[in-house]
Image 1 (tube, rainbow, N blue to C red):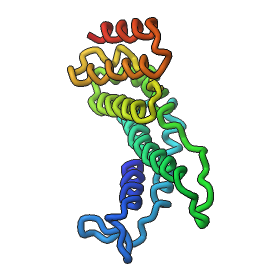
Image 2: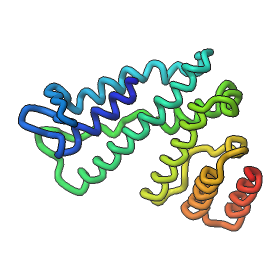
Image 3: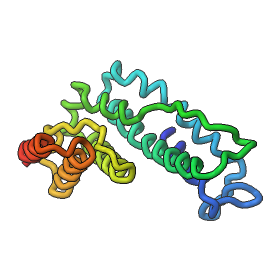
Image 4: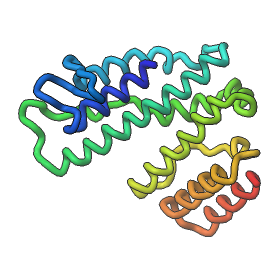
Length: 199
């Protein structure tokens, strides 16, 4: 819930169409005290759970941790896009330079997905599956916009029994990896083997 609030706050405060003299106005609801700092505050409330995911024994909570990391990665992508736009123009004197240090939510997503409890849960829980496929799509979008190979670890086991649409997404990720990695014949063979293992 904190991750959803963080993303919502960031989204509403960044778009000019929601800004009014009295504050943020969204679908007739005035949010006079909502600022970009609220997104940071809600994000910070998520960090302790993300840091301690390896100690979590509860299946529902583990699923929520993964969903939280995926939602916050979306927030990270918004910040990356704005950082690039800002680098093309002068930095506001009142704002000062932005810190480049940030949490790597992709690393958290990969770590949670590779944990034995997650691998056990994956075949029988829908939230963890939905979070995984969302994470793969995020990484694919990021890969194509940045023109670099996907960094997410794609486990062939998670592709077993996937829908045709999701298999196409995984195959596209492998092609992107081949295209922006070394582009070698060896890399192409590895992506083909990965695809065959999922079929």
